[in-house]
Length: 220
Image (cartoon, rainbow, N blue to C red; front, side):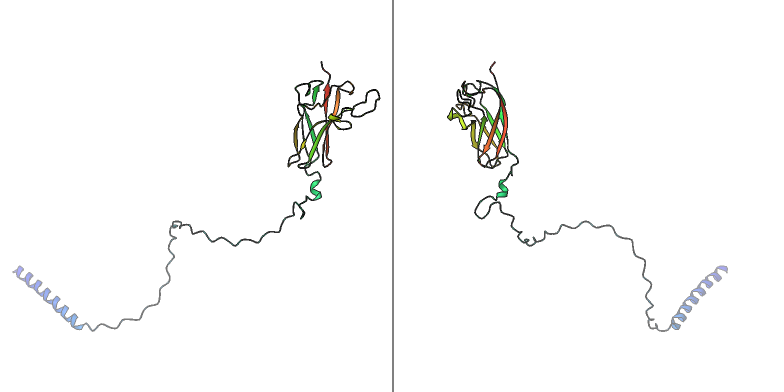
């Protein structure tokens, strides 16, 4: 009997639910029109910065710029006649100097009497000028005491014995060697003095002059 009531209750609940659904469907009206669009909302917060991207490829080389204007001409080294200005002729290489090697010799060992040849070097002269290098010695005429050159073939002037002649370089320097057959210190009794300290003078064709010394010792 109890089970009968339980089954009738379940059936009654199902019937009630269906009836309620039908009533609700019948009462639902047609869909209304869409409402108006609401106001735009506030802007959201900015996002975090992204990671740095890779470096792009190097761009192509740009075109060369225009050539600049030509500079003003410099001062000429030579004038229109091809001559060096006078200001460039005066001591452009510095004061003239000369050196003798060796600067000490023994009488009789210098060529052509011996094996020693005198070498002279100088600088500070004009470029490509002729230079004479001489030993300044005092020659006496026999029995008179008067100074003079009694052996003309060894005399550069009235009191000088030529060592060597030559031309300077483009820089105004020279390096000359006594010729093997040139008698720079002749062994003649009438020529006094034969030994001692003597002046060596280098004179250029432009008038430039430099001097040093050489010492001639007596033979042991």
